[in-house]
Image (cartoon, rainbow, N blue to C red):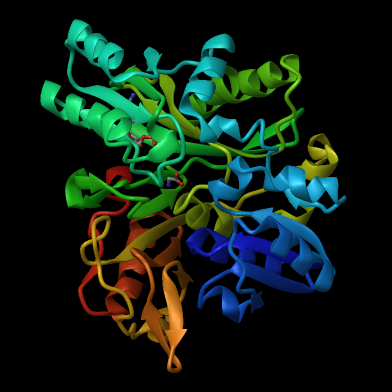
Length: 423
Ligand code: AMP
Ligand code: GLY
């Protein structure tokens, strides 16, 4: 079967590697892809939001399954578009992708379904939001643009002036356009974060092993938040008891709540969790897709055929499938362009990828890379994700960093403490 993967990051390269292992995979296509995905299949120069061009490519290349990586196309209804033409596509419809596309919508559902999450209020106007913050007068307080803001719409405000700046950005300066014209203000949750992703066909929901991302740009969780500077899986902070609690109190209630509300949710549910010191998990956010870089560290552990899983989701037969994982630990270290998540330069030549991949149990996932004059150059903030797979977290960390040390490009930056919390 021919398969199209939409997106251009490390997540999409990893999805390609996992799908290529399937006995039923004939050819892979990526739109638009990167230098890593070009080694697995054909990159198509089509934007991930150009639904008509994507559908035309699916017909031209006899593609029988489309997998969507990023949130943008999902929130804009790509699944509805494809299904209206009877094309098989893996992901939630526009209505259910609001789980990620509108934080107010997601919080409202969590409240209705009794899913543990921070107390909150929603605002559509600067002054009432400002009055609320001043009457609460507790810091930190968390201010979130309602819509998609490329990971930049959340401020954990530690004082009044920071909170006002966040509200000004949203309402007065309209820094996030439409996405910031509604704002969710929520209480600050204390604890350690973990991500539990799950496959669901709307009836059955099956969790993947827990992962932990490292959002801050510098070691020790210092500096501004990024898309993620590294991850590992499994994350021991999410103990089997906590995983069971998340299934009973978060994932199952979400799917049965949606069913009661007449909403069919098919695809991936990503629960971003805060695990309090007393072991109680609350939802920080939901995403309607695979996480990045979580996917890079979760999928290498998958033993079940991923095409079978995706068709079970599409056909509503997930209850008939057993999904198996190996017992290894995978650590992924992001190598980024210096300056990211702020401004950074592109087109720096990357050396050492092949040398890194010669090391046993190292693999190099491409994120922001492209080819120029037959050389691989940087093309984004997050450039590569170097994976180490081992029998323990310690060995996986060691393997991943042995790979990282082989690779270099001008002004590179990576964290040196990925996975340390789990040791
Ligand atoms: P979100 O996009 O909603 O996941 O928020 C981005 C990051 O902000 C999260 O990964 C957390 O580190 C932090 N954050 C968001 N909401 C809260 C909260 N209620 N309490 C503490 N930290 C939060
Ligand atoms: N790793 C965070 C995300 O995918 O949203």
